[in-house]
Length: 79
Image 1 (spheres, rainbow, N blue to C red):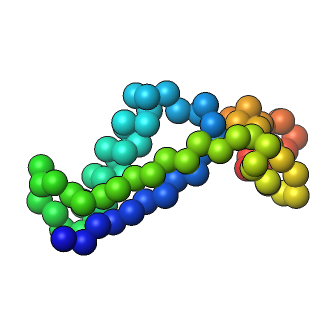
Image 2 (cartoon, rainbow, N blue to C red):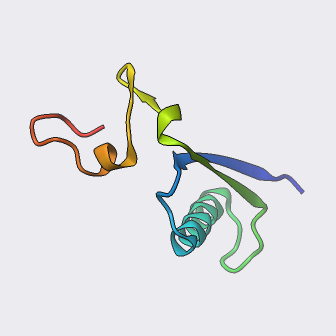
């Protein structure tokens, strides 16, 4: 059986346990739909969620925070 691996990098603290479960389910369901697995079938999808500290995110040449991503300044475009 082939396995599909999905690597997700996200801000540390940005997802509670319920949000993580939903993320895993939605990635698996999206892949199931596009690979032809039957509804309800076990789909060999491995999702790895890496929670990365704010100081390790570089955006537009500087570090950023989850707060800046979620609530950008009104005069700046969203990241």
